[in-house]
Structure formats: C-alpha cells, structure tokens
Image 1 (tube, rainbow, N blue to C red):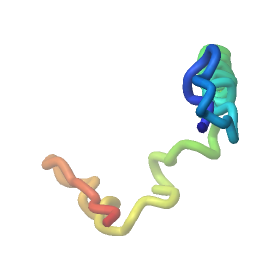
Image 2: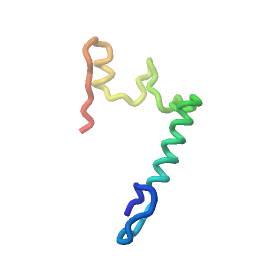
Image 3: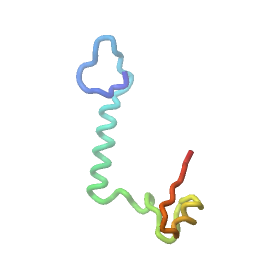
Image 4: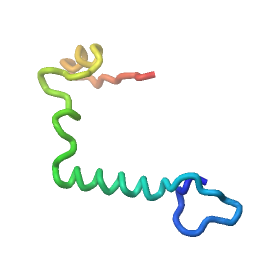
Length: 73
C-alpha cells in the first residue's frame, strides 16, 4: 500500500506511494553529504560558547560533571 517493499505487489494491494524509493534516495543523499563533509553544517551544530537553542536547564547543567538529560515530553 505504501510501497515500502520492492518488487511486484500482490494483486489485492493498491500502491498509493513508493516510499521504498524515497527512503533510498534520502539515505543515499544523507550518506553522500556526511561523506563529503557538507553535513552537518554550522546551522546543524551547537556552538561551544553560544549554546544555540539548548534548553536553559541543559546550559546550566553543562558546567557540572554529572550527565544532564532533557525530557522533551
């Protein structure tokens, strides 16, 4: 139905998407960008002194030696 598998689908299945191809393209592009060093770029990283978009409790805990966790829930 979603096209997650390749090959011929059973007769009773109607494909509404071809996600297997889309996932393959995305994974290939990701691997190429990581391999070439274009990902992650500066916009995907936290700066050591600016803290970027880190939650305040993580920034406050960053100076402690214990592990700090952040619950996004």
